[in-house]
Image (cartoon, rainbow, N blue to C red; front, side):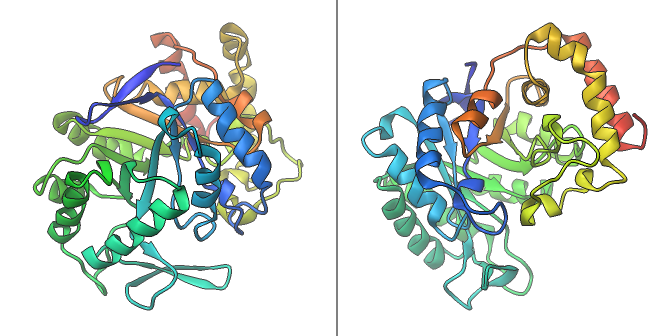
Length: 330
């Protein structure tokens, strides 16, 4: 598995990481088998995947708990990232969303993050987190200065509780604000070949400041795996319901894309999932993009993980094909 460094932190990880959102087992993805999730996390490491990404909001702490069980006795084998800034146990903060009978609120104040960090450490059964990411940014009805958030994170880093600072779902202006207060080593953003807006906005800023761009949902939550054809039943859940490519009027475009890339899959001896992940990792400056793929079964991680390097001509062909699909072609 190809390796890369996270920002300026000196932390080395596999270019492909495993995302543990679905492992949380909430209504976003539906129930999960915890024992199988643990086997999946451990199988990922056997396949060369060193980075595991989770968050308290995934299953209201459940994803972190499962990750902690999976890493027990193996903590040094993984680079572990989790997040902060979303609470479901307080009325203090901006409403982010309602899910499963609770209200998730954005709160990036120092006092709130201090409590979150200790709870995450307990759930994860560890005394340090490699990459600690501010999950969502504050809103005007509960504003928190970036300087306050960063002061806490820098202190936690100095104390050895975290090793690197990350932020997620940011604008260029927000990331610049963080960088004026201290080093940010990673941003985690929604990015795929069918949704390249965040890359267009942030790749250059990341490159100039030594920040790793980490992609979530590069497969459009399964739509770009090539598994789904028109008329196939899809277990949507809340997560997939927000992806337009599953809708009947758009899914034929994905099917056409899968057919068009069949020769490339044969050329590289890979699945469409592998092809899309490799294309995504080749974006940015070619060495600062890290890709997260979700998996909660060993079969999924074994299918998703394959270390391939695409030729420049194939990268460009895929780019043109994806742009055509995005704008209505096939």
